[in-house]
Figure 1 (cartoon, rainbow, N blue to C red):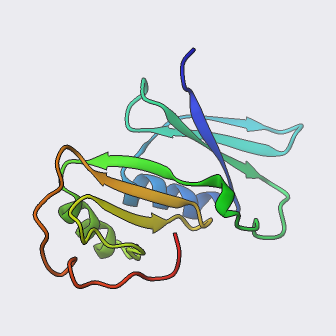
Figure 2 (figure 1 turned 30 degrees about the vertical axis):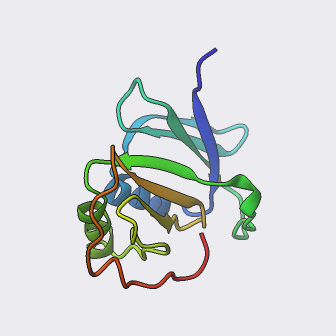
Figure 3 (figure 1 turned 90 degrees about the vertical axis):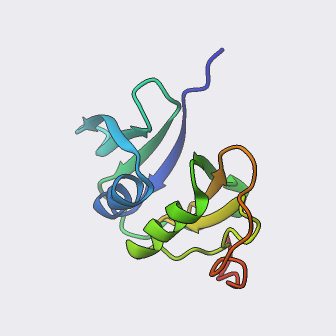
Length: 139
């Protein structure tokens, strides 16, 4: 058995792609349009052989999807959590749970999907401004 992907329904495909590609740093691997079913599937990953996120965009959806914390989160490992979170902030992403411990942070997509950012290897030494930064909202 092989893990393939997690599916996330998105309300605004262009905002979702901006977040996952331009901010998080994934690449679009493939896209399929389904005229008869009136939906688009976009598969994103760090590389073509990595597990993917499937964004499902239903063309006729009129209302934002409701948020359910039962989904959990998507997780990504980064080389330097402080640098990565700083870059996210510079792109307008709110760090909901700052990496005070040098190990873990959380942000949310435009569709309120929780994204966990984890430090590769051992935790980095604690440092400001992250150490004193408060949590924002929920993740």
